[in-house]
Image 1: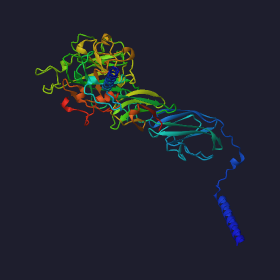
Image 2: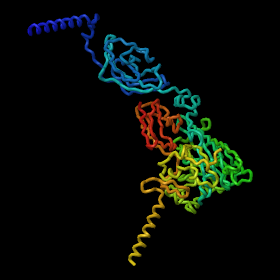
Image 3: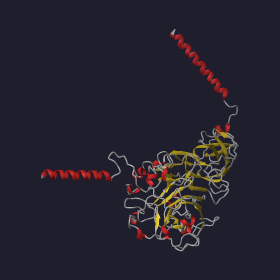
Image 4: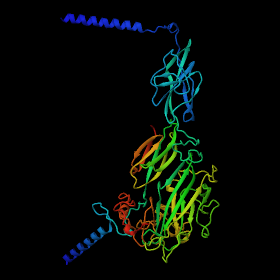
Length: 459
Length: 129
């Protein structure tokens, strides 16, 4: 029984073996290549090298290389994934530089076959990754024999469409048909921020932070070289809760005045306490450009109805607000100012340094905490009365208790009624401040528990 | 007499302890007490009163990557906090101001989007797909 089983297995195995042999014989190609049988092939020993791409458009490029020592070379390309097969010796492939029109070898398309050292490829997808192989071959009697040992492998990306040619893809370009402009960056990103000042520096006031209340917003336009082209500032003066006739200005920290071509829109007519450069920036500010926005808040919002102040008493008439729009031109229609171009990395959000000039006494500036004064500030005020500024360590406009004279809120908020302590209106401010900003970072947002609206002017 | 001296010393000690407790706005358990007046605030010398927080952005370029695209930092509503044209082969470091109440941001580059929390204070951008 056991022997019969063994014989049966041997019989079956022999049958399978014979069938396999027959199949092998039957599947041999009809054409037999006598040449390869009689000629020895010398394959190329030096592969192509030094790949280089010249990007002509989002859908075309010129691919260059240094050729190896084959009689020719075939160029393959694939989209998104690396090439996964080799060309076969002696096979006839159709090359076409329009991607997808040539022969396919696995996932690759044949772009070129010949003895040149570049090919201009078209019909590519934009914003896509392509893999390229350059394979040297030896030609013998019209057949190509490919060097699979030394060959060039590389990859590249195609770009996105860019109508105005400023290198900024249209999808990211706020001005897709203007080669001089590309990006707009707003600060705050939406709406306005609010600046709140106490104006008795270096003395301490009543901490209602409404001596001057100004909303602000600015946008910076930059080009494809990341240089500032222009900037627009909007200042909305909302309230005056003090009797000093303060001016308002801003400094661009680190931006020299000769980087600016023109300043327009300021309200400084009749000012006698300072002078201006031809471009509209303040004269004699050697280190940072300073822009005087208006010379007197009371010029913009006069008192009415016999009240001393403006818009801080709920019983007083609503005087409304004043909007001042300032335009700064840096690069004027492609023309760079005397001081050269200005990178956005210098004029970033931290460059904006707003301040008031107390009662138009030019040297008496009040800035946000730890912001540097202008070159016209009278440093003789530092360290007097309640001020504990120490320029040597970069400490400015903070009291001995580290309290500021100005606040910058990144969104527009209501301000306090006259003589109302700021903490009475913004209930979580003190937690935020005393936790060094770690707790209640959203104290200024209009959320339950954040505000006592009875202490605020809300119109 | 000694007893009187003892009670005086104890009494002065108690007064000093109570006074010390009143001076600080932070209770022993770490809880911060709200203040009623701005002038009574006690803050660190390093506190800058800024409603924006700083975010350090480090973009690590890849020398062999020829792409050029806009690098942006956006919030969930698409508001842009920072943007610049950036070559993928180049690197840069920038300081960006982010409103302190904003928690969810993302950066984008050449079709890649990555979410992050700005509270970390620093992000390292790998632009590779």
